Image 1 (cartoon, rainbow, N blue to C red):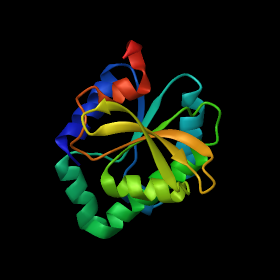
Image 2: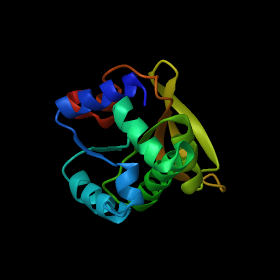
Image 3: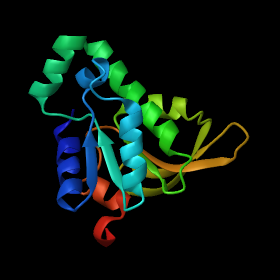
Length: 165
């Protein structure tokens, strides 16, 4: 997990954003269920933006990778975030989706059956808003997809519209 993304998560929290960190080991061991996280997010989205992430300090990432294997840990996170995007996208309180991480972005886009992205305004250098489109060109949801090291410290704050950002 990039330091930039960790800093962006902390800025989001500091600005009053609600967040939930998912742990691949807890997901694997059934200590956390994706449906429970989706229910929390659905309730919390009624009050404002939420950030669901698996980003963690390097020692915690290493612990998960040692326990599960590098590929399995990544696959668990990608699957969970994809399931959450599918569960939350249809809700009226979900106005947009922001995904950090290249492989995670690909997994979420695939899970949502996004056929194309219409590029919109730039949020930060190299990171535009997009409109996700299905195979018939119907608009699905506004999305921002970013690599871990892209975006300024207030990236999540701005994309969530917290404090007028």
